[in-house]
Image 1 (cartoon, rainbow, N blue to C red):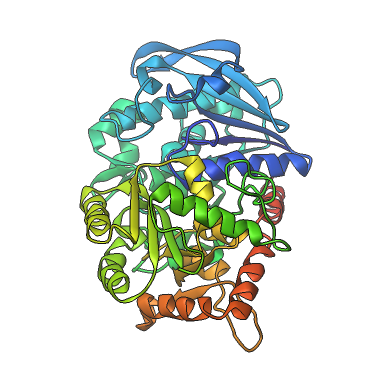
Image 2 (cartoon, helix red, strand yellow; image 1 turned 90 degrees about the horizontal axis):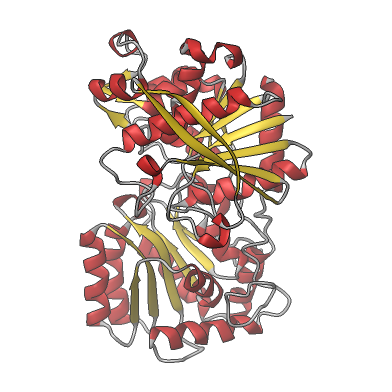
Length: 475
C-alpha cells in the first residue's frame, strides 16, 4: 500500500512537540511492515544544515494560490526506507520558529495546496492520505470539493487528532482569502464553527476515519468536559473514531545505546542509572547524593500540563521533604516565573532550565528517579513512556494516554509501573507523589517498579500494525 503523510513538523528535522516524534517514528514502522511511505513537511529554515545538506532537489511546482501564480521547491531525503518530501517556500517557511506567526492561516493553507499539488503529480497515486492536526486538516475538504483535484478525489483519507484544543480557528474572510473556496461552504456550516472557520472541524467532516493518539482520549473527547465544543460532531462520527496509542522510537530512546547520557544501562544492570543521576546533579549544581530522590519534569509550561497543581504541591514538598527537583521546559511566562522563584527559594534543591536541550532531556530521563506529569488532560503523552524506558518512575494524573500506560504499583503482587492521581475522583496529586516517595525508601519495591517500567513494550510496532489494519479496512 502506498501512503502519504502530511504534517507541520517531523523529528528530527523540525520539532515543536510530540507531533514531530510521531511523524518521525510511525512512518518507519509502517515501512517495516512493507508499505511505501512518503512524508510531506515544510522545509523550515530552522532545519539543521546537517540534514539540508543531504536534501536532493527534485522539482519546482507552480500553481495558483490567492489569485497569483506561486511556486515552491520540492526536496527529497530518504531515511529508514521512508521518502521525506520538503516543501520549500521562503515566503512562508523561512522563519525563526515553526508556529506562532501572524500569517499561520495563510502559511498552512499554502502548505495544504502544496501537498495536493505534489500528490497530483505523482506517477503512482497513493492509496491513502494521512493528515495530522489542524495544519493539514483542510486537505480532505479541498481534495473532495475543489475541482482542480478531481483526478485524485477518490483517495481515502485519515485525520489524526493529536490535541483537540488546537483547531485552527480563523475568520470567514481568512477562510475565503486563503482557501479560495466558495463562501457557501462557510455559510452552510461546513467550514464554519461558532462564527469562525475551523480547519480541524472541517477535516473531521470530510475524512474517512478520525484517529486519536490513545484509546482513553478517544472516549474523553466525546464528552463535554474534554470535547472542546466539538464533542457533538465527534459523537456523530463516533463509528469512524478510533483510538490508537502512540509509541516511542525505541532506537532513539534506548538507555543501553544512548550516547547522550553519561553511562548506558539496561534493566539487568541498573548501576549506570546512579552514574547518570550524579551527572544530572553535577550539571544542575545540586548536592551529589545518591540517596535523595531526584524529581524531574520535562514539559511545555501550559495550563494543560497541570503546572497549577505543582504550584500548590512543590513549595510544601520542598520545605518538608529531603528531595531534589529539576525542570526542563518553557511556555507561559507566569509558569516560567514560578519555577525561577522556586529555584531562588530552594537553591540547594531546585534547578530550572527554561528552554529545551535534547541531550539534557535524555540525561534527565536517565538520571531522575521520579517523573512528574500532573496533566489535566493528556491525549497520549510520550514523556511517561520515555521515562519508564529509562527506569524513571512516573507520577501522573489518570487521564488520556496516561491512564492507558501508567499502572498503579501493587506492593503485594509487585505489579505496576508508577503512581496515579485522579482529579475526577478527588484523588490528589500530592497523595500519589507521597506514595512514590514512600516506596523510594523501600529498595526491594523500588527496583521492582523501575524494572516493570523498563520491561514494558513502548515501541511503535504494535501501534503501526493497528494503523495498517485501519488503512486496509478503508481502501
